[in-house]
Amino acid sequence: MKTELIALDWGTSSLRAYRLGAAGQPIEERSLALGIMQLDGGDAGFEGALQQACGDWQKADPHAPLIACGMVGSQQGWREAAYVQAPLTAADLGAALRPVERAAGMPLWLVPGVIQRGALPNVMRGEETQVFGLLEERSQEQGSLLIGLPGSHSKWVTVEQGRLSRFHTFMTGEVYGALLAHTILGRTAITRDAFDAQAFERGLRVAQSSDGRGGPLSTIFSSRTLVLTGALSGEAQPDYLSGLLIGHELMAMRALCQASADQPIVLIGNGALCSRYLWALEHCGFESLSFAPQATVTGLWTIAVNAGLVGAASGGYGHV
Amino acid sequence: MKTELIALDWGTSSLRAYRLGAAGQPIEERSLALGIMQLDGGDAGFEGALQQACGDWQKADPHAPLIACGMVGSQQGWREAAYVQAPLTAADLGAALRPVERAAGMPLWLVPGVIQRGALPNVMRGEETQVFGLLEERSQEQGSLLIGLPGSHSKWVTVEQGRLSRFHTFMTGEVYGALLAHTILGRTAITRDAFDAQAFERGLRVAQSSDGRGGPLSTIFSSRTLVLTGALSGEAQPDYLSGLLIGHELMAMRALCQASADQPIVLIGNGALCSRYLWALEHCGFESLSFAPQATVTGLWTIAVNAGLVGAASGGYGHV
Image (cartoon, rainbow over all chains, first blue to last red; front, side, top):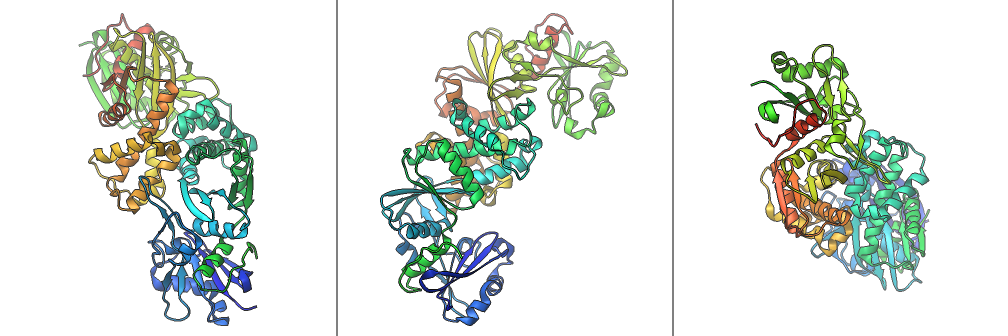
């Protein structure tokens, strides 16, 4: 089947390549450990990675356009695709793609990140593509939608009438990692693969309790003292800490977004992490929850259509 | 002058030894890099450090009693002096000293730490001695006093009628260090010795603003985005982050302690760090502030008196 678009999700630690056919249908997918931090930098390094990911696709269909989102468009990436200001639509993103001219073959079009100016500026790069992918897949929805993208830097994005209107960032995932690896909390914690639901929920409850008014700087210390006093096992400490931090994030998100219990919320991302957030959101009393495993492919197709790189949109294919 | 008491402040990274004369007057002071983390452990390691610190004092006055506070009495210390439960007085601490019998010479008496039981237990070890030292020095004061001990784990201690009644811990200092050293925030931050008062105050203002409702997990990200957008220099980022975190700590402390603007507050500790906190407390509207550089020596003397190791109290000497 003919390649209509080569779509790349090119982040810090990985490069995912998708070969899309008519109407954005995914035909083939590859994942390589060639994130921008794994590359030497310079045109040669990026070009080499691109060839490795999809040189054969380009050879077979030399006129297939290429588009990429993620950190490849950052200052540390191949070229910088300057931030576009929120509020914005998929058309605004499509109009602001930054081309990388290559020695041979079609240019690579970079999707810009999004900036929200103000007293405390906020930025995203990569998440905007998922947001517009999700909107394309749920085109029937109107009104206000709150989209959560959990991760090392969780994003909470408000969408109104198809516009990405504003967003917040919480460094929850990265803080969690740094606390366990580089503070006294790690001395008593024992990490394992199993998920301790009871410990996680206990953390959530504390964050929502009157003790939670102390905020994370205060409550995290309890993840140590509960172990010292035998009220929590070292094995349960990581999930308790996770519940604490996610609980604080959701309490703060609710205040910042003034979100009511019936606010429709969709989570996008990693299944295991989204499960934790779905549980936590339910625990906080939110009633209208749903989940999308990923929306990047549809987002890249939608933006490419808006940029005129490919023909009329249809989309709605999230998976190979 | 005769040695009445050998008083040791023996923490994780240092050992401070004080030779005290009549009525607890300090005669001589030494500071050694022989904290419990620098020692091999075992009786020989601790005994060697003790000899190095004050072997000559013991030889000159073989009957002078020895007392120590701090992490030397923790599970990782010489012996564990089990926590005493709050609320408590100096007499309760004096009655709970744990002796270390030595092959030769007087026993070393370890001051126990303090535990506050409850849904979220809280512990301190070393700060209790400073608190009772301060109370001894300010014996004229009645009513409720709030004592702040800033540090890697800040403590906020409420004292009522001479009793240490309750306390809170904030991991502000350690979190600050981990964020700069081990998260993306460190990539743009440039550390220097000078204090950027304007950046610090900007952080304080944000923590108290409506944006501050996002809590530290959210606001800390602005220490990066402000640099990315040119609104803050990399050199100013560390003090901005410090202002943010201390601001969040104080807002939470006020809520937890239900502290009013005229609540008397005393800070004990390192001068530079206490200056930041005094500034921040003023910024938060607190009106009755004072500062004590240290109170450990008076505290050790007071507890020794309460334990009957030395004669009637007088105290009030904080410095050599």
